[in-house]
Amino acid sequence: MGQFNDLTKGSVVYLFICALIVAPPRPFVELGWTVEGIFSGYVGREHDHFVHYHIRRTYATLISHAFMVFGYLAMVYLYVGDRAMLPPADGWASVVGAKVVAWWLGLCVGLAAVAVAEVWRLQGWRRHPIVQRLGKYSGGWRAAAGSISTEFRRMDKIYVKLGFQAVLVTDRWIVRAGVYGLDIASQHDVDMAIASTQTVSSLENPEDAGQILTIKVTSLNQPPFTIRLSAIDYQDIDERVLRPIRNLRGVVIARSLEDEFLEVLERHVHAAVRYTLPKGEELDRCVGCMSSAADIKITVCRCRPMWCLGCLAKWFANNQPQDRPEIWLEGQGDCPTCRSKFNVNDIAEATVHPRFDDPLPLP
Image 1 (cartoon, rainbow, N blue to C red):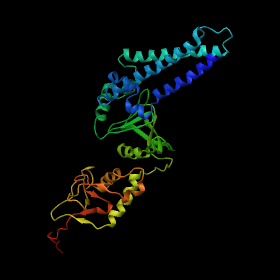
Image 2 (image 1 turned 90 degrees about the horizontal axis):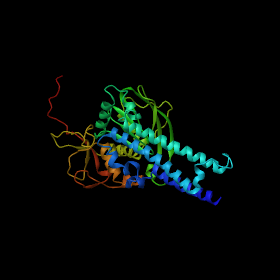
Image 3 (image 1 turned 45 degrees about the vertical axis):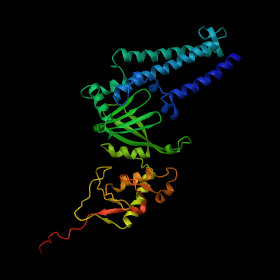
Image 4 (image 1 turned 180 degrees about the vertical axis):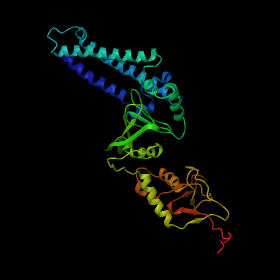
């Protein structure tokens, strides 16, 4: 019995190690102690070719997880010996019999996983699930893979990671990267709807706490899948997708601290004295978003208006203690251009100088 007690203890330790490999904590990821980090020479870089990277990553992951099964079987054999391979004398219902069945079952599962992965590789990835899903689009899987990889390298993509998944949103594609594959949908035929929501907390990383939304993604050419997003990431993606994400359940989306700060700052700036540009000057485009007018002036520096209120509010908020949002309005920030110190009382709305020399309309 002492032998089996030792096996039980060893099994617990081995399963804990396997859990660290399958779901590595953040310190492990930062150090590169992951499957893709260990096999980086074979997998390559995600930035170079997104789809080919994930094809090789899923192959390496499946092989690695299969060998984790073999490692456990080897440990069982060391503890139980030949009884791990022979029918037990006291019947299959005994403790030894159950371990023998588990040993052979684990061996079959491990060999099957290795066989599947090798079939993928030896046949040029034609049977890989990622390739088969991309093959449903016109032009073949290589054209679709090239399109996704090209758009992934662009600066305007949205790429967020949460738990075991990563979500990529580009001009044409919505992609969910899981442990063993990719779920893919084209923006032109996709329907997205909020399925559920939950509030989570994180003792290890309090900044990760907040509202998590589960969104169902339905496409004409692909099986449906779900993605999980924080409320902040949801707002960014909702603005990026071609069709708005449906909220049929009436879920209340939590607002970010930056949004709440921006609302308070807007009221404060609109109530303050405005800054009038020198005669002949016009408002430029905001250098942050390049879409809104640069209508905000920091009055304590000589820089011309270069930012809209939304972009300057984000800059100011990011320079404040993130764990103490209640003091943001009392804090100081640096001018993004000249680094002069300023506070919210030094922010004014800029207006164009009135043109009194314009001809009056005829009566």
